[in-house]
Length: 265
Image (tube, rainbow, N blue to C red; front, side, top):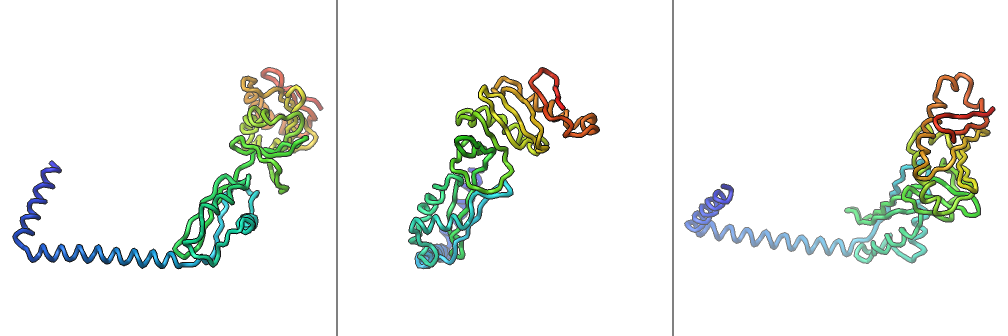
């Protein structure tokens, strides 16, 4: 039906223009002039764009955390150190891909996007990596939310769990990552747990924000059931009994026993 309607309309228009030769000439002339106008505008616009000079670099850093591992100053210094001239240069001569490549060499940057605005500004949109925890032993590094290790950590104040003890990189990127991810996903546990200690036989101990309180979790491999133990811990802290006697009443809390919690004063 749609095809038939289109054919009828086309035949009607052709018939009309065929009977009105002067009108058809007018339509042809208008189309030609429109095409020429678009071509001239495009040439002039491209010419102006090629001759335009960069007026400013605008850097935006996207980060979900209240702290940042990358500063705008550090980004500018990296661009300058690479010998890339931007401000005052012709837009056509600025290599945006080169700028992006230089910025993404920073291990704390996940991605960078560079583009030109209408006001001849170069915009640099940066997405930071998101560290989840920090390992401090004979090595020192962050592990981000993509299981990537960030070595040579930047000395800035963070609110990330600190892990020490017998931590291998393989353990940090697998079992430990899953364990910390579970804690970080829970608002209560993420505020409670500040430090994690890994023993030689890979038993886990937690240090809480209360200071001198140790929580013995045990093993945290895939089939260990640590999730249930942490749920018991949360229920224990939020129970009326513990709220009545005080959270700091016990110096040690042991979760390693099935369906129970053993406390020591």
